[in-house]
Image (cartoon, rainbow over all chains, first blue to last red; front, side):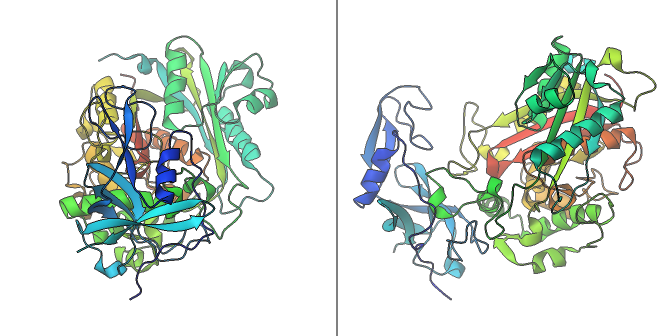
Length: 139
Length: 386
């Protein structure tokens, strides 16, 4: 069976916000970053201005190892937009530092996806100045 | 137990024609038809309406000559019904009109319906849409509890068969379906086959709520508001739909709606065992399995075997989504399909469903939303005023 691959440029692209800009700037450089509260240590579910747990304002951008495990996934055969090539496999990766990343799986066949499989991110251009983190199996 | 909601009844309900495409209509015109039908059903003159809730509330105030009249542009389903009840219970209004509808919205059929496609920056590049988001939640339930695609297919077959016999359903006469038919349909987002998913269509609807003082013997039988609640874990389709994500209570997002259900039962002074019918929101087959658990009809993780044992069929312990739901009755977007769960609940209470009427139905639970959208709304309706 075919190996899941990154989407070609032409798909709908993210529009970074003032608060998420560092995430996309790092992605363009091939780095995965995440926010962590310097006060209470919690990681928000998406880029925020204040900590969602302690309401502190000390969310700092840290560099992730880019490694984690597969938490959940689906394999899509009916694309939400004709620019997407099927099949593709949206997934949630449990990242080593204790946060969840929405991504898509690449580098393996849909049949070989397994719960909890070890993953690492790799970056692929999505058009414009956007690079998307994808997750592929690692040894 | 007494609660301010118990001063409020739903007096009028109406569904317009529902179809894949309603020629000559847009969302405003079909919503207007839904509202007019609900007023007629209630026997309420527009001049008696004190408030209108919905996307087109201002247009309705004008079209029915209701001014001066309060308008609330709240587009949500059950939360809008509860807001109407709150306005009546606290004396802000005595009669509230709700209307909703969708038409001429979904025109580019190469893509999924516009309301299913999130645009948030953290998910848009991965081709997520509602089916995929709910699939990510369903997968966790499968991994944790052993829930199977066959069990999901039984849900879809049950609800689609309710539409098969319902002449008002968009997919009337298309069945009957067995679980094997569901699983034979093409895969959309694993584990969901095409027939595990809601359809898309066009249509409108309306409701009229009134204070107990206006409930007379001549009007249709009232459906009383027994209780209600609304749970959200954040904006739908913008963050990772993670079952285990927690908020202030430690309850996981995968159990969204459990708190709203508990609140609803407490307000009503009843429990799940008192409920006769469940008119649940069915965007994807798995969601019914999950809602059986959060509404308390079975234990956590037991939803799969519970539906497989036939409990949700027309003759089961708790018949579910008896009009055919968003899978086969109608799914017009713009939230008409959310109000339609409540409308069917009222028809069950009245005993007027032309098909799949549950004999002697006295208490109905209705829901909106689901785990993949990180929200679930609940309302309890009753034949008797508490």
